[in-house]
Image (cartoon, rainbow, N blue to C red; front, top):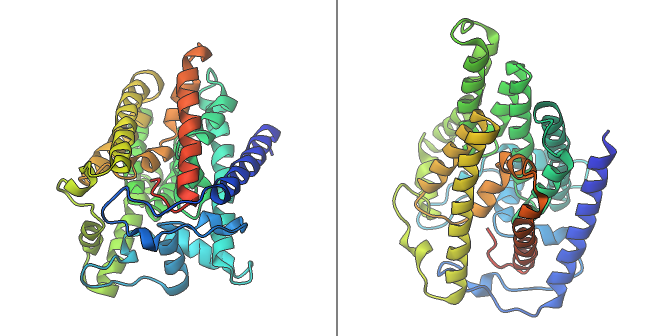
Length: 367
C-alpha cells in the first residue's frame, strides 16, 4: 500500500468534509434561483451537523431510490430514475447489508473507497507509463479540481473514475481481457463508459496491427459495449422499450437538440453558471488538443469522444462534473515543467472547488 497515496487521500477527506460542514452551517441561505426548473422551496437549506447526510444532494436521491426500490418509469413530465446506470446503486444495496440498512452511509463509503482506488491506480499508471510526470502532483491536481467534491458524494463519479483508469492501465499492460472487464463495468456505470471501446481498439491495433484479431484478447474489448447493451435490453424486457433511456433523457433536458432554457440569462446566478460551463468547455477542448499532441493518442480519442457526447445532449449543464473523470487532464497538467505556470490554474481551481462545495451542501446547483 502506497503511503503517499494514503496520506493524500486521508488528508483530503478530512479537510474537504470539515470545510463542507462549516460551509453548510455558516450561511443562512434562500433557495437557488440559477435555473427556472429549480423550485427553491423544494431545495431549501436545513442546517445540521450530520456529516453523512451532507453527501446526499440532487442526483444522489435517484441513486438511493434505485438501490432501495429499483427502477421505475414515471409517465408524463415526471423525472424517472431510468437514466441512471445500475452498477453504483447495485453496490449501494449490496453494502447496505453491512451498514445496518443505512443506504446513505453505504453510498458514501463506496464513493470514498473508489476514490482511494482511483488515486492508487492513477499513481500506478503515471509511475509505470509516464515516468517523466510528477505522479504526486497528478493526484493533487485531481483532488483540487473544481468539482472534485463529487468524488466524495453519493454520485457514481469515483466508481467510474476508478474503472476508466483501470481500463487504460490494463490495456497499456496488454492485458486486454482485464481491460475489457473493467470497461464492461464502466459501461454499467455511465453512458460514457461505452466510449472506452474506442481507445481500447486503438491500443490493440497499435500493439498487434491486424495480425491477431481472432483471439480472446481482441474479443474481450467487445465486453465494453455489452454493458450498455445489457442496460438497454433490461429497459426492453421491463418497460418494452429498448430506447427508453434516450426518451427519458429528453425529459431531463438532454436530447439531440439545443436546450434553450439552459442557455437563458434570466438571472445573475444563471449568467454565472453559463460562464463557468463555457469556461469548462474551453478548458476541456484545449486540454484534449494537448493530450493528443503531447501525452497519448488513445487518451485524446477518449476525451474527444466524451466531449462530443456531452455536446450532443444540447446543453452544457454539468460539464464540470463530466470532465472531472477525464483523468488524462491531470497527467497533462502534472507534466508541465515550469510549476509557476500552474499557479493561475491551481488558484482558480481551488477557489472554484470551495465555491462548489458551499453550493452543493447548501442544495444549490453545482453540477
